[in-house]
Length: 310
Image (cartoon, rainbow, N blue to C red; front, side):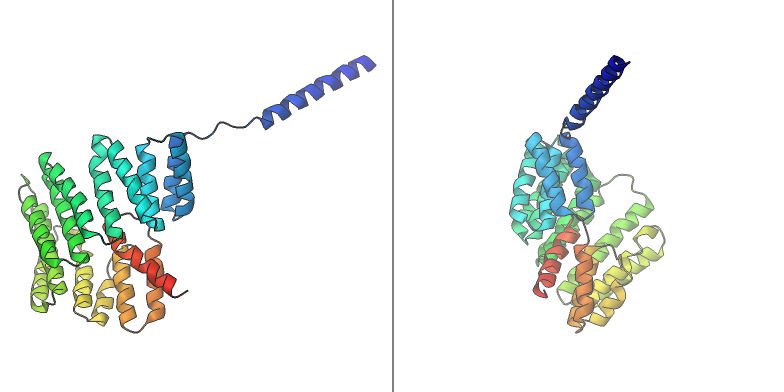
């Protein structure tokens, strides 16, 4: 009996030892793509520093990962590390599969927009426009022409903005078989653009005229999802014509998830002498995790304003 107890004790000790060894065995490191997926989630949650760390781990394991370079560049821009962001966008462009090349080039354009480098931003958007025309993607080319026009406008060149908005309008007109809704959408976007350009030039009469064109097109009901563009336009025009009360009234009815709208609201409140409300809107801008021209216009200014009040 004593021998059985001893044997049983030895067996149990061996099992416990084996279990301890197994428990102490380190798990396999996460795969690069798992790290990229984790980093994406963190980035979208606004945890940019944690996302950057995960992307760097992914690149340690897979230095030629397009997804990791692209995602890291995006997160670095949102964290304010603009120069390093562009280094990784350059690597992403070089590594991009053909189907991802346009997006990588566009995001490099956005990255330069974050730092107000108009000439470099335009170079990358123009490449995408040319590539889409060559691929006979007329709708896509028109879209990026309008995006480039907006970059020109918000970075202070309304003349080139109007040229590219016209290019977007004329390119869209080449799309075969447009539906009435698509036709009205192109007309609305063109009038909307002309109103904003006029406002930036201080031409209140033309801005108001184009506002009326936009309203008449939206009132047709062919593009109900675009209705929110009208209060944005009203607020934008009022802001640049220095009617800050009118700007606030219009922009409060616009898309409150759009960081550019929030930035204009912040500036309108600031210029109305309501600094505390302006700071609240600047903070809302910083909550956005988008990597698009809207945020490229808004986020650096919002960060500067918040840091200056600390």
